[in-house]
Image 1 (cartoon, one colour):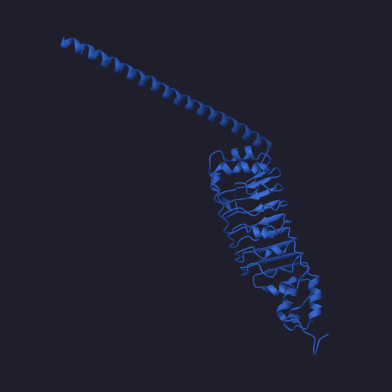
Image 2 (tube, one colour):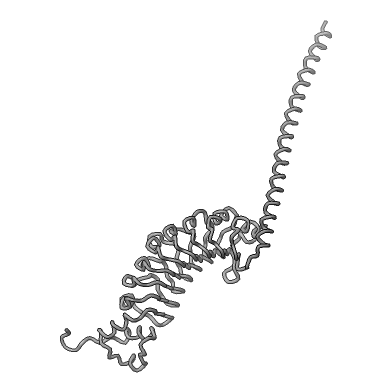
Length: 311
């Protein structure tokens, strides 16, 4: 029960239902709001999907009105921190892109998330303290940020898609060893520059699509190395797509044959090099021994000749 007139919803809060687009709120109703608080909250419970684009701003507190929200998309706004998500425990898809977001802290409340897209922001860390709560996550997109390393993904054993393109990641190491469900991995336009990380990916038996370069984001330095495709296909031979290009069985077979041929050639050259070094060391030792023996003989002969002359 209310004392006096029951509270009415402000134009700002009513506009959130307007952007939800499900309740037929007219422009006139938006300019002259008359909806009561209880009616407003009931209508908010029916909203499952909400998009906030550019000037459709919403305060963190107002987001909590939509307790049954399952999909939330925020684009082209100023959102340095992911606040206001605490009550959105049913959220399954969250996209905060091109918003100047500096951290994923705050997302940990959304424990039912299956899809998280925080691309085109200013994030510097894959925060393990946040990711550890997102065990239901299937898709993680953190493209075009400021990440320098892959971390915190160990609990995400259901993750199938990971896109970290256009960051500053130089090494993979064993950061993905627990993510055995991965089918799609995009590391394009990072700083990966050598082959030593590629064999780690051979553990991902379900991986079908791998990108170190693509037309949109660009390439990693490793793509410019000689025999790049051959090396990748040999070690990650279950791929269907490499750098956005479909692979055929013939391409995989050719890569394996080429790799083995080059490996045999390298082993032969190494054996020849070691043999040459061994031969050179032996020859040097023999010559040194002969030189020492010859010098000793000459010295003794000289002494005998010298003694004869004195007599």
